[in-house]
Length: 199
Image 1 (cartoon, rainbow, N blue to C red):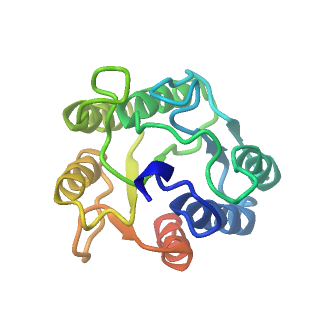
Image 2 (cartoon, helix red, strand yellow; image 1 turned 45 degrees about the vertical axis):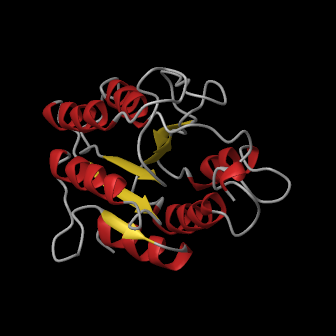
Image 3 (cartoon, rainbow, N blue to C red; image 1 turned 90 degrees about the vertical axis):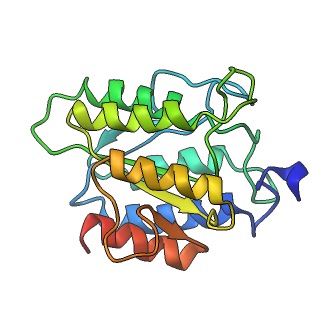
């Protein structure tokens, strides 16, 4: 249902992705310092805050699960469904990572359910060129990006953009049918996240 923006209930993309994220983070938070950023997160259209929902830290599964729960509606879907300001979120994530002083390698993991928009600030307009550039800029700053698309392969334009993002991010998938990691449900996302972090 397009009126739901993928956020209607327990079978929504939101419900599937957050279940997988919670599972993987809880299984790996002793070896991976996780953080979390939502987008949009300033308002229900294209607003992106400069900060993060959960700062990067060790043993972060409980704060991440709590932040996800706080952004989940009573029916299990995403609360305050929004546009997809991916370029702005990648830029904010890159800036945030630049504030961290620990010596650990740092990566962005972008999980999205479609084509980036918000080219004009209000949700209208394909913002693929700016998003592809934002990922390239993150790599230039020292932060490779893994790109995960949730149920996106039926959209040729989204697939082309996510492929370009994965290549520009320096961590394209090898041996798959797409350069980005394409997933369709909770189980395939868990498998993909575990592959990305080397489990």
